[in-house]
Length: 225
Image 1: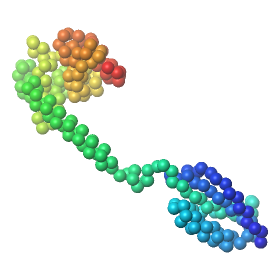
Image 2: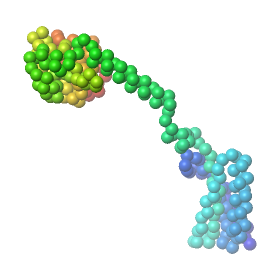
Image 3: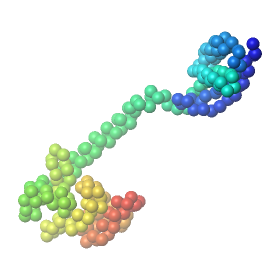
Image 4: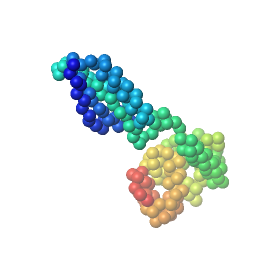
């Protein structure tokens, strides 16, 4: 019986998050395949116990070369997260997200409860119109009304000038900021470098409509302010 030819070589194939190192034994067709296979199996058991991780076999039969190849593959763990851990929720992250949402809800409640926030009925009286008309204007972006959940929509009184007229550029602001009433509110309530540190509301009250719209357009583009 021809002696089996054993060729040792190492590789870096990726398999299920491990680095594979292979050791190959090439057997002539006339070799006692079962005997050698059993020997390699026993070696693999001893090896796996010694190194503390998995060792597997790969057997290839090559009719062209009239030979069989037995390759024990030593699998060495790499620095990666176990698959069973990746699907587990991060308790600290979930707690942080929940806390942020709670702060957001409290802030929304504080804003809509402010004295400057009017109900649709109260706002309609200032405009000399009906609640239905106010809601239609809100939906078209002609007036600013933010959703207060339990309190319903609230309309900041500061969007009216001394003559009781609304900000003429409000429809354009809504369109630029994704038709999001809260985005329009945050823009008007925040300070902007493009407005020389003024809030959008302050610039609007000073008649700088063009500057207000330019700042909103920059914000919509994602420009740094």
